[in-house]
Image (cartoon, rainbow, N blue to C red):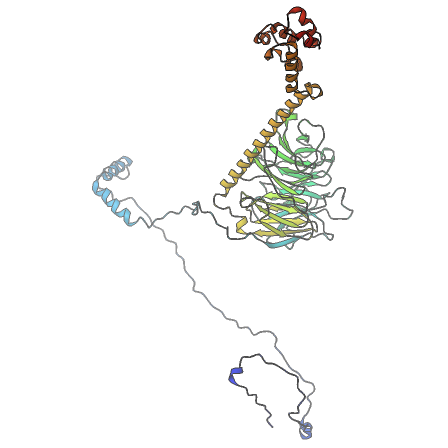
Length: 613
């Protein structure tokens, strides 16, 4: 019995979506079971069935042809010389060569043959720069950043990221320090103090472990040996690690010669051995070390402003050999940046200048990679660009809503720098295009960003947060590749701002000098009497005394206390010249002198009465 139902509809309705509607049930067929067929059915028990779930594979073999190599040699013997030339004699061969080289037929033949083989032997300069002068144009490309990976703290209890540093050769290795830098936040017993070295090729597990006795707050790779690391501990000790010799430090400074506060930053110094370093702490001192002998500090220096007595705690350190092998800068807790010179003639002259302006600790301090006399400071809610020769900042970013915790220049673009914020934002500033707002803002984490570092190539950045995660981001080409004439433009802009600030300083100094002179002049005039008031009184007195007013009767000497000579009296005419000279010589007798004048000379009519009055 075949059951079917035919659906028919016009061709124009093909391709339309069906519209279903609810209808009542309809009996199409009623098939009852066949009892005869049921009796013929025999159940099979047991039933064995095989199933193959693995795909079928085929195997093929191929045998490649074997190549047979043979070694052959060519023997070259001296020949082709004329019979009258003995090729064993050097003088004969040299004389024959000179003779042939002067032949015109030889020169024409060599020129003709050289043209035919000129393009057969091309030498390629492997160091040639094929795109010299080519500058990428990314003006139409908006800046962006994409996440590469996240490095998580392997410890059971996540710790804040205290510091991040990349391997100097531009590789994919980075050292991440974990520990809290909050005030009086000492590590709890049982909490891990280890820091780790990570490799971006394997971000799931650390490449090496650093296990100090106290938590590391800062660690950096040695510039000459990538397996050697230095670190500043929470207890003030400076430790040296060698990843080839295990996790424990190979040497540590003794407690009695170390810092008394945590080491917040340190730097490897430029030297032939690469074994010298310097560290800074909030105890108000800078110590120099030689890792070949860590039993004592090479040198120590207190952090005081020039002419000051109070110690300043250091939280950031900047050392760039391009600015000078003995120069360095320290960012202090008070918001001051100290410019120092280790090789100063006098110990008191080591601090050469101080730059104030921040309202909190200076957490970020970096010199410009292209213009070393300019530097960037990051603290409170702003980032500031300075010049060593000017005490006021050249550029100040608008105040951020969140506190700034780190910052650095881009090593590849002269006009780009980065700032990390306590609300988890990472900002990229491009002052080559605009100053009032960042060009890119990325929400890296929900927690505060506590550390930031950028690779030497400028294309990859790492930002550590308070939840123990370190995000690695790749920047777009517009934030990495410098634009055309960008370096010249940034240099001209910084020079222009420097000149403007110098003009402001000069105007401020002139205003102070003028105000000081005005204050000194007014302080000599009692009861606020001015020169005009004195001149009016002198003219009135001269009119009453019958004297002719002139320079000789001006009592300006009474204001300054000076004694004029007779030159002023000689300039006055008439019979009052001698009296005027006497008045100038005796300014304290102004009340008695007019009463004696009638006896000395005959005053005009009414003069005696006026003088007595």
